[in-house]
Amino acid sequence: MAAIERCRRTLRRAQRSLRALGGQHRGAHGAVLRLAARALGAFGGLLAAGQGQAVDLPPDRADLMYHVYDGGGVESVGPALLVRKNLLNKVSLSASYYADIVSNASIDVVTNASPYDETRNEYGVGLDYAVRDALITVAASRSKEPDYVASAVSLDVTQEVFSNMTSVSLGYTYASDDVGQRDRGFFDRAKHWRYRFGLTQILTPRWLASANFEIVSDDGFLGSPYRSARVFGAAVPERIPRTRSSRAAKFRVIGEVAPALSARAEYRYFWDTWDITSHTVDLGLARRFGEQWLVDAYVRGYRQDGSLFYADNATTETLYITRNRQLSSYKSLALGAKAAWLWKRVPGQYEIRMHGAVERTRTDYSDFTDLRTGRLYSFEATVVQVFVSANF
Image 1 (cartoon, rainbow, N blue to C red):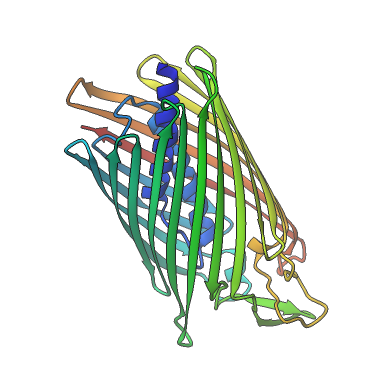
Image 2: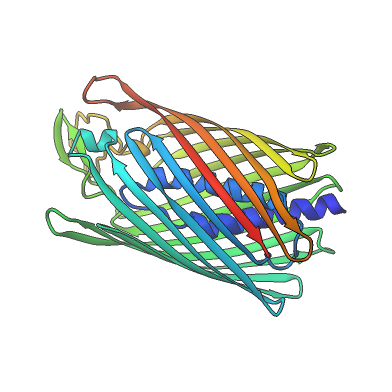
């Protein structure tokens, strides 16, 4: 049963780390920041695997991270901070800060405008309340950059049933974005509604599986005022629908395959009303070396089919048209490794762990060309993180 409890804690804390530190990464650099957030969220899962704390509430802790992203002409660096404190063994309060100092000379920028630098700051607060076999989480976040402000509030409820062998979760998030353009006084808004359902089942004393389903509804300005499309080789303003609905289903299995060695496999399928579909496969191994070291390695593959109104260079004028490469057809492959080292522990008082993570990704586009060369575009990116965590 100890292995079951460790797996259960790992899943819970990985989800909480992603909510607390990942944030709502939208705006002009949304794709870049989401990549860093995913890596950070996965790193939170590694952190959880090395701890054995309370089941109902996350432990008192302070996390400090510094992240670096470099790829595709974009450089992003900055710190992240999370502080969590329990009260009366029923309530856990948390506060987080996440910063990105971005230097942007991506393919979209260099073919339409001049490189630029800007800073994005995000603040978040959260409350976890444990009652019997249920955990209720309320969280809010707000991020701001020079021409983009994003706010979000969320509510999640997790209930354990069948003698704690099954965990059922329900969640809802409402988010709103204020979108602007500095050089011509453009301003618009977008709203987002997210509904999610999850089920985690203990299969055997060594294995457990989970299934998650999410529905997202978007309304408002969903593009970028800086982006242009091409029709017959001429640049025209991007035009995309003001509504979008999407669905995503994710399945995961994790278990112990040998003493101190665990394996995991994950598959995610996404589809939406813009005719985009995508597939994600993630495979990983984690190995513990004594009480001080935990090492994790993984590979992740992603493939996407482009939207109905995407065109690299349209030959007809249509109501909607975009050249946003994130809405095109492409595939990517990521290789990553993470390590945690127990630096110091005083039983019953505190524990300090040091962490490091690196991920290398290559992305190849099927129908997006580099206007400078006329060839299909591809790029490589690296995410590096240094993470310090203290439980007390």
